[in-house]
Amino acid sequence: MATTYRIAVIPGDGTGPEVTAEAVKVLRHAAGLGGFGVDLTEFDFGGDRYLRTGEVLPATAADELRGFDAILLGAIGHPGVAPGILEKGILLSLRFALDQYINLRPVRLYPGVECPLKDKGPADIDYVVVRENTGDVYSGCGGNMMKGTPHEVATQEMVYTRFQVDRCLRYAFEYARKYGKLARGVGPANTLGLVGKTNVLTFVFDLWERAFHELGEAEYPDIKRDYYHVDATCMWMVKSPEWFDVLVTANMFGDIITDLGAITQGGMGIAAGGNINPGGVSMFEPIGGSAPKYTGQGVINPLAAICAAAMMLQTLGEDAIATRIENAVREVTASKLQSLAAGRMGYSTSQVGDLVAERV
Image (cartoon, rainbow, N blue to C red):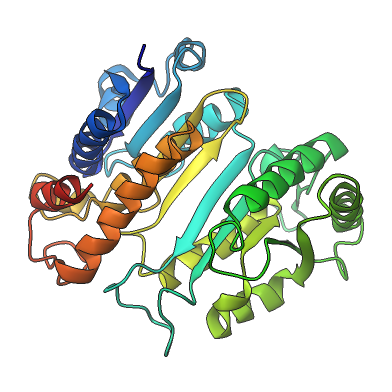
């Protein structure tokens, strides 16, 4: 009997429903070719629901979403809702409630996409960042004293447990073994690079570095290990991105370097990411925002959402069909689109979805 995946779909705000529709179009088409089924259930979490009901996320949402195989998210962000309410109330709440402790961000330049880095092409920008997604300064440890006075004190603590570090590193090592450059036939080794700041953040990154080498030596001797200070990483992401294969890092550093990586691969219109719980339900999304000024115009670029759907299928174990979607996107960027920018693609949002689906 063919496998059927239960997918929760959260189109979200602004242009989120438009890009999600194209991702679903490609997903359904790919499922037919791959011999598996997709059972899609849509949820209306987002700004419109919040403005209508005053509820950011139902109390039962996390428990209900645990019953799905994966979540496909369009975008969160509504011009009528103050910044932070939806982002914290939906995105962060679900990441923590569903223990999505990995943020996975491929940084790949597709052919035909304009890159801001001089003389760099698709062969040079082809790496992945594994970001720990639940600890660090995002853990909520800290607070204010004497707020609003000249003597105000604010603290926000970088906190990690060995358990959090180990499980993130183990995922990164496994990912490098399966999807590193040697495994894909594009490099001499599968390399995992730890990004940290051992010369200043001597407590937290001493823990990360010790765990990195202990785990690598004991269980992953086939994976080459490197270490990079985060500031040097930012410089080399611009100057020599071809050095990198798979990078693993803490939450805050990962938040910063993945956005730098996104602009080198052509911007948010092509960048996709996954919030992953390897033993539970994971959530996949385009990295760009909801772009409300383009809502309903049919001009927004859906490729990042389509790439997020491909990431979702890869994580579900459908590697072959995920690769077909990625190759279809490559063909479309190389031979069809005039630009990734909204209104300048040379095609409408739905037409771009059609182009990818036809080539899968």
